[in-house]
Length: 116
View 1 (spheres, rainbow, N blue to C red):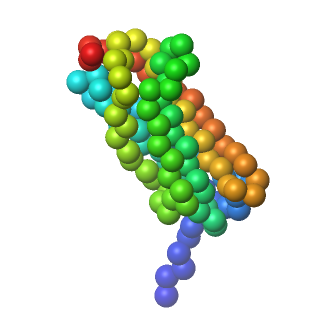
View 2 (view 1 turned 45 degrees about the vertical axis):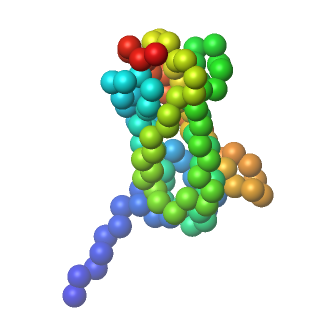
């Protein structure tokens, strides 16, 4: 008989203990799309995930909302709106629940080369 050993990092947590483990950003060479990979702690209740890309002036150039996401690892490609010159950008991710609001957030700076 085998007894499975579960890492304490993999035990599902209640909404107030939710954490973002990582947010990885990978701009495409065309300068028009960005791949985001978000890793969350395991959860007991499905969260709402807010994703946003903003330029260095804080203008939102892309975003997405995932309502009651079911996976702890999410990969999504966001398309940039309008003319987005090369430069520094910010990727923001937030985890929230309707009853308690935002429980976790992170921000990653990245640069876009080339593009339009």
